[in-house]
Structures are given as structure tokens and as C-alpha cells.
Length: 197
View 1 (cartoon, rainbow, N blue to C red):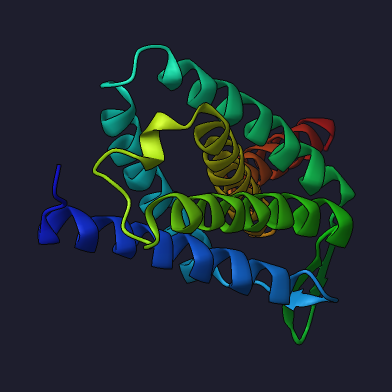
View 2 (tube, helix red, strand yellow):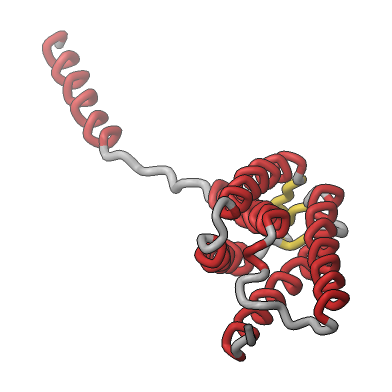
């Protein structure tokens, strides 16, 4: 069965995006990072779309969607655990956070290793890097790792957004009770003083 140019382009686009996110994530694992709300929002918006597209392809392979769901559950838990290990810093210079390097790098290397393994086996079996349509979604392990990594990024980005919004202290509301109470109290004091006189 021949591969259509559209499916090859789609697969290449998803692969390029995932590799870009993995590489940029590994680069950010080293040291203190400046908080970027735009980057967190993009992560929260784009990764669910990728999950939906991959899940749609996995529906053709009975049972594989469960592996991806398992990866999503594990990844969400790891994301929130990673937030607990993250050091947050709100200084006059801006908002900063220092993620746990070991957890993020380990997850990223798992996915990079899986992609390299898939590319290697694909090349040695077909003598090319052209995968048949739906090949990505036919591998339970790849789906599990993809779901885990995607959910980790989403939950971590959601945690960063919540932390940033939590730093915005609500403005104290000025009540009009105090001014209205003061004149009535002073009027009662004056009336009491007049009765004594």
C-alpha cells in the first residue's frame, strides 16, 4: 500500500512538532527559567489537539487507545508530581521557576529513545524512513509514551498558569459601611451629651 503525500506530510509535521517540544523542554531543564504565559497557553492549546488526532488514528487499532489513555493518566500524575518538585520564585525581576531536571529529562529521553528505535526498525525493515499510514498509532508502547509525555506537558503548563494567577492578589474592596456608621455614632454621642446638660 502506497503512502499518500498528505499522510506523509501530516506525520512529518506531528513528528517535527513533538521533537521540537522535546528538545526545547530538555534545554529548559537546566537551571532557572523565566515564566512565559504564552508558552504555557500554547502548550495547553496545541497538545490536546495532537492527542485528539493521534487518538482518532488509534481507533482503527482495537485496544490501542487504552494504552494511550493509560499514558495520559500516568503523565498527568507525573506532571503534578513535577510541579511539587519545582521551585517557584516571584521577584521584582519577574516570575521564575526551576523544574526538577531528572524527571523532565527522563521522560523526554524515553520518547526520543522510542522514536529512534521506531525509525531504526523502520529503516532496517523497509530500507526507508517511510512508514505506512497509521503506523504510529499501531504501536501500543509508542502511544503510551506519547500520551504520557503529552499529559505531562499539559498538566505542568496548567500548574504554571495556576501559580502565576495565584500571585495576582485581589484588590481590597473599600466598604461604605464605616463612613455611614461614624456619623450615626457621633450623633448619638451629641444627643446623649445634650440630655445630660
